[in-house]
Length: 152
Ligand SMILES: Nc1ncnc2c1ncn2[C@@H]1O[C@H](COP(=O)(O)OP(=O)(O)OP(=O)(O)O)[C@@H](O)[C@H]1O
Ligand SMILES: [Mg+2]
Image 1 (cartoon, rainbow, N blue to C red):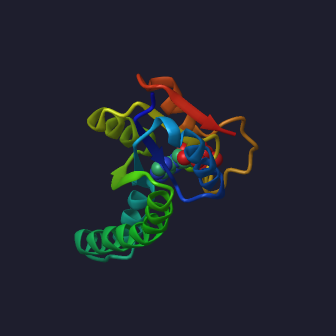
Image 2: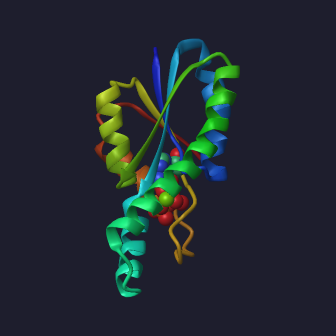
């Protein structure tokens, strides 16, 4: 029924919990698309700092993006390995942008059957409030045309 699952992860413990539920969905699914989005807000904050320090913004931003992608590839590699061992066909994607918007764009492009994500994630820096649900999860639920499963 849920042949192709989109599993977006920010590599948080909350997102890791989702893996247990993917195993449960195994009988009805074939493929998992693992997606990590490097938050554009983070990159923009660095850009401001580079500008403020009088550095070459384009050069430093390109270097930063390469580093962030490299780090994400390392982390996503472990997840891909784990899911392959569980018998899934797995593909991974790393994007830079707004997490919820990229999640929905990938869902569309890949024509997924379901999006499975955590109710919370790493949280935004300086946000100490306990929320019912994170903003990425909320926006995905609000705007998705595909079924969404949220793991609390
Ligand atoms: N950058 C990201 N890339 C891919 N998936 C993400 C990303 N951020 C969040 N997710 C997915 O969305 C789930 C919920 O995260 P969300 O960002 O909504 O919570 P939060 O970080 O606690 O809240 P907020 O970001 O609003 O402070 C995560 O468990 C993960 O599955
Ligand atoms: Mg978040």
